[in-house]
Amino acid sequence: MTPLPSNILSTPAAHQLQCELQQSFNTLDLDWGVEVFQSIDSTSSELMRQAKLGLLAPKVVIALEQSQGRGRRGRAWISNANDSLTLSMGLMLDPVNWLGLSLCVGIDLIQCLDPERKLGLMLKWPNDVWSLREGQYRKVAGILIETVSPSPTLGSSPTSSRYCILGMGVNLHTPQLHTDLPNPQPIGLSSLGGEVSSVDIVKHLAKLLPVSLRRFEREGFAPFKSQFDALNCLQGLDVFLSDGSTGTCQGVNDQGELLLKKNGIVHAHHSMEVSVRPFANNTA
Image 1 (cartoon, one colour):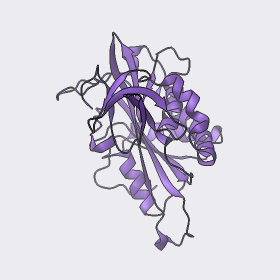
Image 2 (spheres, helix red, strand yellow):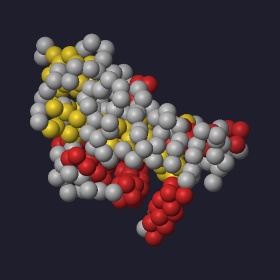
Image 3 (cartoon, helix red, strand yellow):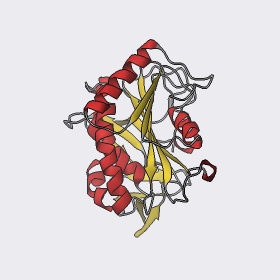
Image 4 (tube, helix red, strand yellow):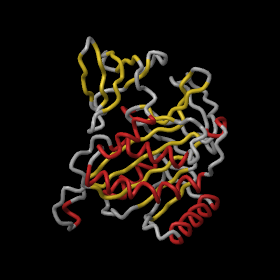
C-alpha cells in the first residue's frame, strides 16, 4: 500500500472493510486491489495520485467520508459519514471512442444497486442515477470519469491506453444537507426500500464492470444502447441544456450522444459539452 498523504485517514473499521472486500475478491478470483479509508479528500484524486506514480493495476478505492469529492463540471459531491458509498475504480483502457462510457457504467451501477429491479431506478444522461417519486425526480447516484496517460518517464512502452478512473457516489441514506438543496434533491437507497449492502455493491461492480468495459473497448457504446434506452428517464421529455438549448429528448445514438429534436430537426450533443434537465427540474 502506498504511503498515505496527510489528508487521508484510515481507521480499524476501514481496515476491516478492506480485508473483507479483498478476501471476497480473492475468493471470486477478481484481479482487483482494494483500499478503504475512513476519510479522504477524494477517491478519484487518490487513484490519480497513484497512477501518476506508475501504479496502474486494477484497483478500487473506497471512502466512508470524502472532504473534497467532486462531480461533473466542477460540482462538489457532498458525502457525509455513513450517508454515502463513495468509490473509484481504476484500470487501463484503450477504446476506439470514449463517448458513451459513463452510460455503460451507469447501466452496471443500476444492476448493482437494484438487482431485482424493484426500485425503479433510471439513468439521466450522461452520468446520474435518478428515481421518480411522487412526480419528482430525485438523485440516487452520480458518476465521474477521468483518465490519465501513463508517464513515459516510468519506463513504460508508448501506448494509446489510458488509466481510466471511474468515480461513483451512491446515496445509501438520504443526506441531511445544511446548504441550499440541489436540484434534483438527493434520496437514499434506504428511503426507496433498497436493502443491498455497500460490500455487495462493490463486489457486484468488480464482477460486472470489467466485462462491460472490455466489450466497450472492443465495440464502443452501440451494443449497450438498447439497455440504456430502457433506463432513459428523459425519453420523450422536453428538456433544456446548460448552453441554453431546448428540445424534446429522442434518446441517444450509437455513440451515446444525446439527441434533441427542435423544429423538426434532431441535433446530437456530446456529454462533455452540456448538462441537461427536464423542464420539471429547473436547474441545469
